[in-house]
Length: 378
Image (cartoon, rainbow, N blue to C red):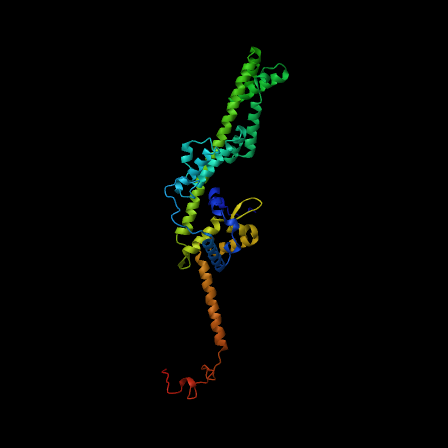
């Protein structure tokens, strides 16, 4: 049976997920989803008090308006220049020497800064490592990357001396290069073999092999580039679709009205629903995978999770009628009230004539509730 899973990446990009998860690893149990509301409120109060105790008071006018050095002014720069100011400082210190002013001016958000650092790291790779990293990052299958890399590495190892050498091994190498080039150009096997014989008879086989080697290098590099380009386009399309779905889901939960019976779901509960399936609260120590509270519950209680999904599916008629939850609750309350009424009726004592028997006696002057001149109009 195929695993039923919620994928946070279908709602958030890896950068967004990391940003949301930042700082959650040190949360207490009271802050985790599922903790009683009173504990979470108490925890918030404790944190607030702690901040008040540890925040130093400002004496005099210690702020320096107009200071544009974000690396030294304690965060006084505007949000648009904060990260670019850090990037400029790193370049001045020789850490990011290869970036222009235009590159650094574009760094306005945490994502831009992370991308700049990644470019700086990958620029230190050799050509082959950088090529592999880019291909895998674009989603090219590892087997495809391996095949292209082995072919290009083999072709790059062939030098002019190997092509021009005498002997059967060098001759076979020239034949193989010429043959592969002709086949790549659309020649049939028979025609390619005839062309090879012509080349050797005319004595042009060495020059033809050099041309073939150059053509083969270009052929496989272009093929590699095309594979990466297609993979990159698929990745970008997937990201666009991911963002579209994330925006749509957010609107469905937080903006559209969700009816439960005759009542609409309140905003606070709607936010909790959205957070439960979109915000990471746990990082798997083995895989590093970020999980939402729903994913965490599924991982820890897979059978119970499946039971709850099945229960929800049946009670909502496949998700078409959420109000059935409210109807079911109303039936429970109704049945409860009926049973309580039956219990009270069965426990009530009656007189011989069927009238109610009161603990203080039945009517008459001896009834203390009706004495001292009080009258009850019937």
